[in-house]
Image (cartoon, rainbow, N blue to C red):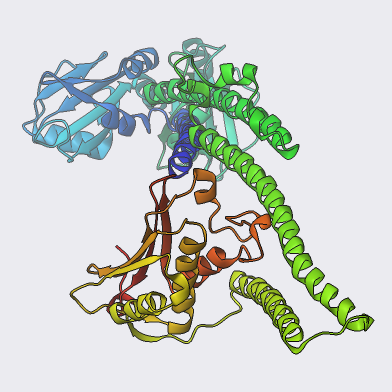
Amino acid sequence: MSGLRRRLAVHFATQFFFLWLFVLVTMIALLLLLLQYLVNQDLKKTFPNGALENIMTEAKLDQGQIVIPSWWRDQLAESGYFLQIINEKGKVIYAFGSRPAKTSYTVTELLGMTETGRLQTFRVKTSLDQSRALLHEPLLYILGTDDRNSERLKTWFESYAEKGRLRPKAIPEVERQLDMSREYVQVIDARGNIIQSIGNTDRKEPYQPLELIAIRSEPGSYSTDVYTHYDQASGNIWILHAEKKGTGYSDQPIMSDVIMVLSIAGGILLVMALVLAAWHGVRYSQPLLLFTDWFERMGQGRYDEALTEKERKKVFRKDGSIRMRYRLYKEVIGGFYEMAKRLAATEKERSRLEKTREEWMTGISHDLRTPLSTIQGFGHLLESGQYTWTDEELQGMGKMIREKGDYMLALLQDFSLAFQLKNQALSFPVSKLEINEFVRRTVLRYVNDVTLAHVSFAFESSPDDIFIKSSAKWLQRVLDNLIWNGIKHNPPGVTITLKAWRDEREAFIAVEDNGKGFDEETKRNLFERYYRGTATEDGTDGTGLGMNIAKAIVLAHQGKINVESQVGQGTRILLRFPLEDTLMLPEK
């Protein structure tokens, strides 16, 4: 399922990546919009004072020529400003607008311009760029505008002033020169009180101490351009309010390209995120509905109906491959099929085991009933007192009763042993055991048994010593069960061969016979606890637990047991045990 986890992680991570990327781009775009708004608001207040720094920032170099963005050129032209850029030699390398007819400046002109803020009849603002971003030299930016209104105000003062005020006789002349609808002149004293007002204005309140400074610092915040002249003799100030040139400052598309790109990218990302979300919704919901129906059928025990015919057509193509919309869950679908297959096999095996157990219990009941009937019959005969028995007859009946009781006791002991082995309630004290000698003695014991004259035994030993950790008592029980199984289920004349050998890690014991063998069903169920290789009618010899006990003992010794058999070709049972010096080694 690692592939499924990886694909799910990639799919959801991709969706969340696009969503978060959209959020990030949107936040950046909104931040830039806010920044643009704040910058424009600041420029509105400080224009033209704040414009020069922005022009310096946005100036570019194209094929060796300095280029100023068009929106700044339009703004300067609308407001009546000119722009010049001077290199370190004083030469004008860029000029725009109605400017002084100069192509270069002297040192004294540049210094005087910087200190006084004036150039001829122009009011100018300068800023030195030493970043060398455009050219490999410092550049001086000059932003200026015609300052004729300051000259007008100075001329009026020189011509019409008397003790710091406008002479009454000169007022009509000044009014004639003013554009009465758009300009007005006011004279204020040192405290800011208006002592004279000429022109169309309703202002009567005095000027605050910092008001004129604020007008100079943020001219864009006021509806008029303000020009002043200070009379040192009287301490009065003459103020000319004139209409602003142009329409005033307009919002500049600062960072507009970046914002536009981010907006488009954000829209694309949003569409992609929505498409991915819709696609994932369809892709995940359809298989989940399919799995829901699947679970319902499996809950009802209909394991063979994992998918209906209609559902199979949805999931699989004609060539058997999974369709694209369900490919994400290919491991899950494969796992479901495997699980349904195993559940069906388990259910079938459970039914088979239940049937086998019932058969085994029937066989055990029959096996117990037969010796019990014999014991009960002899008991009735002895109890009735109707007959006189000879010592020989009484000895025969006693022997029969003892044999039947021994058989019943062995049957119960095997049943108890099988239960203990199944629940791992039996411990095996183990010690070092040499296999060659152990198996050889076992074979000799059967060779010397005169009751087994109809069976031949053979042993093939290993040239090397073979040591394992084992309980001799219980390993003997395993070999006895396997040998007796070969004796009981084969005709007279069968040959039973035991072999022992080893490799680098394991010891092997094989019990082989050349008897009649058995079919696949018998081979499959040979080690089952409720399976008997012979029918119960064949006699009371055998409990049906011997092979199951043998397998449990082998597993308790960390070993393995396998059977190979074919009808008419004999049987081979192979035991494998770890060698004594490899018990703690990691398995290859």
